[in-house]
Image 1 (cartoon, rainbow, N blue to C red):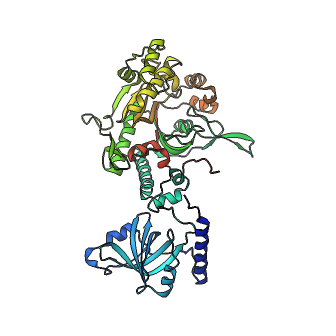
Image 2: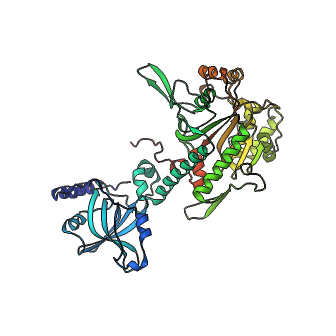
Image 3: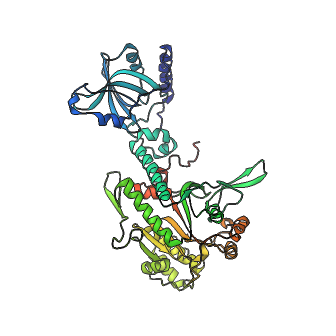
Length: 504
């Protein structure tokens, strides 16, 4: 990101900082009052102000552009809300401010005060009467200060990316708004927000490889949580009927455009609910967030040229009640619909396996597990990536969902949904298993690599023995939701500080 001769630039900037000190000016500023956000200043402007007939305003920002014309200079300042031009004219400035102006560089942060007006070309401008230092930048901005182009550098130095690329700041603010609306929706539904342990003596709630650490004082191994599920269910046992947590989870697994080892999840549990009440809730929530933040239920994804590449329709079937408008289909039914394989609980024949592989080259179809695993793999690799509009895929094989209740009519399946939008799972929801004896058996027979199998959590089973009410539960990948709503192509675009391999 930095130019090869950065060291010489830094030395020059340090010399300017020293000159400021010699003038009695702290190059790193101090407390400043009365500053107005740039977007609010721009909103104050009226055409009748003329060149400098408007009110006196004070702004603080980073210098993104500096055009020096001797006794007059034009600066472009940027804060978190936007940009504005500042005219620095020797006739209007006091001596100290003019001397400060001569020591300014790109990326410096300053405070400028003056009358609001325009230039001869009509550009909104602050005609500065006073300029003070806020922070001297000792390193220069990227060569192209209108925006970083080195993607890896952007992720590593997000603190530069945010002010160099306005779209990155916009995306960061959208994330904040989306999370705020999710929280507001849950509270509006009567759920209480709780906090559960992030360090656990036993990782549980999902089949995933945890990060392991050691607690010295207790001389015991600990794990960063892979899910808060088992602790949230303990709260149902304790008498809290509707709980949720916006939590950080950690999984010691791969990194991809859709996976980061540290990620954000929403999990919620409701006593006397089931997977259908959770489906209604998550559908209503996502529609609420989209409408509140974006003002539409039709989400357009655009490329760099601002051309629409994909439209996601969150409206669903308007003839149905709110919260029940998105498609609902059983996993075995959608597999039969898309592949012709009518699942009957028996393993796929060698002929069918070969046919699926030939029809789907490049999909790495193994199909060498149990019938339940074959069905799940077929759905996840061939069908889920094609589901752009919202679709609740229900009745997943129970053996792969050990914490969900089996369907009464056909125990091979569990009463669950997997919500797919934009080709990936956004949210799973269960009718929760609350029988401690059945739960103990499920823990012992969980499908998956032995290294990733969930060990029996004896304390959780003890909690269930005290009686957990029938309940519905759901999880939602907040990062994936934000990707879907904003059109971000990588999870690293919507995480402020994604995990990166250290630079050598």
